[in-house]
Image (cartoon, rainbow, N blue to C red):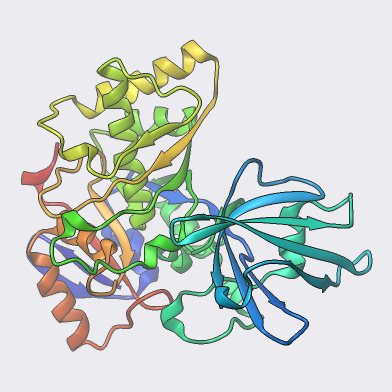
Amino acid sequence: MLVAGDHEITETGFAELPDFLPQRSLLIFNDTRVIRARLVFYKTAGARIEVFCLQPIGSYGQYLQSTWKCLIGNAKKWKSGMLEMVVPTPAGNITLQAARGEAMGEAHQVSFSWDSPTLSFEQVLEYAGKIPLPPYLNREPVESDTIRYQTIYARNNGSVAAPTAGLHFTPAILESLEERGCTTDYLTLHVGAGTFRPVSASDAREHLMHEEELIVSKELLMRLLSNLCGNITAVGTTSMRSLESIYWLGAAIVNGKEPGNNFMIRQWEPYEGEVRIPAAEALQSILDYMSRKSISTLSGFTGIMIVPGYRFRICNALVTNFHQPKSTLLLLVAAFVGEEWKKAYDFALEKKLRFLSYGDSCLFFRKEADAG
């Protein structure tokens, strides 16, 4: 693990993380669970069609039929007709069918049906699908990936990519954090395939950010509110994007824009004029809204894109992996750390630290001048 703060960069083992965090820190984890989103069908003539399930259209746990937004590999070989596969399950074989629907940008609607009324589509995917490893690994998933590419605290199905900063955490490390007086809490951001989409434009303002489902609880908001004067650490860029999105949700409510059933934080919303609403006021506004509506959880979508120049409202520290050039993840790190990120990455390259999903970790601290 690389540790960067106060212009100093050091290298240590990840098990030493609790020693580098202030006592009574609050760590926020993303408890999303990666689904087996890749389905491989074969046409009768032999063509291989891969259907990558991105996001349900409607309920995730439907029975007998379910429609999803999907990417289609080798789509030119599947212009019409039904795809079909036989899926072994503990209760016997079932037949899964897929019908291609209308285009949704680069994706398509795909309607699935199956002949077992006792299985939800969530369960069907567990038997029929494959873990969607990051494309840069350039290999098919193996059995160990079903465990390795999942955090130990994953519980809410919906991601097509793991929040990989969390892969470093073990029960022993969580216990060490507790012994140091640190506390933990969870939110859910279902990570989409867009997280791997590079920033191809020369100007980041021309990049179209993907939208991801975010779910937060009243308990989390209360804990954040009581820890704003302390140290809040985001575990992973997905947690960081989520926490900052929560601030902008609260700011919108303060300004009289109630979220309704599903809120939406737009890509460039944080940059549309100067906003001086304190974080405590923003969080309290969400809690008050949830109390008025008698709800304990709030869900919606965020497409927020964090780039250099962004002013962070919630977090003081970030645990993350090393990211690819020209990625929105690296832009977020650069925004959080400032120009020091280049020194940190040079240090990592010199020490031959491992990059990307199964790589090593970083702990970055925000400069005091940037706090608030």
